[in-house]
Length: 251
Image (cartoon, rainbow, N blue to C red; front, side):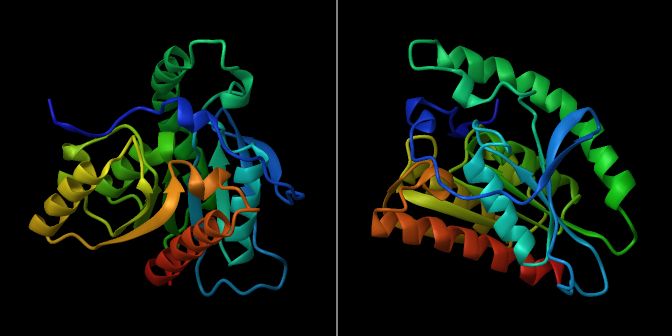
């Protein structure tokens, strides 16, 4: 069995700040999953091909307002953004602290993995063309989906933010450019694991880039506190870096 590098979500994955704002996307069913769809503003040129971001959410799911606003940001930059609700409406906000959250997280994983291929096929049927370029971003729970897509060559580039559920084999199989947006302090993907992942990518001559942000913890890229300057800047810079990574490879 391949050694674990990023462990499962823990208690701190359920903490953070709910952001304010008005999402502008819509929710439709794709491949059996409710999907948040955010598209570029009318008149915004996207070049000669479709650029699609597969948004693989953390345990709060793609319909949580913070994640909706993130998806809208990427759409405002010229991408079609698709966020599948692989929690089937039963995301983290439904699980209070007095319950066994770890059991719920582990139980949610198999159904999500099982539902994803059908959803992806539906996405390709609707948005796919010879010139379509797919990118994928995974936050926490969503990271392993990105790594599988990047191993298969199904995307032109991938990004991870404070990932969970990864082992060495994910990095050994990597075949597409990868950006990792990491907090300095991350219990699921600690410094030693981060350095081991880098060693593997260096050894395989992978194309990769790390963002490492001081003064923030796991979850910062989604649920950072906008009233704390370092957390706000880190969250916004993470999103900007992810967007620029995708612009580079989906151009």
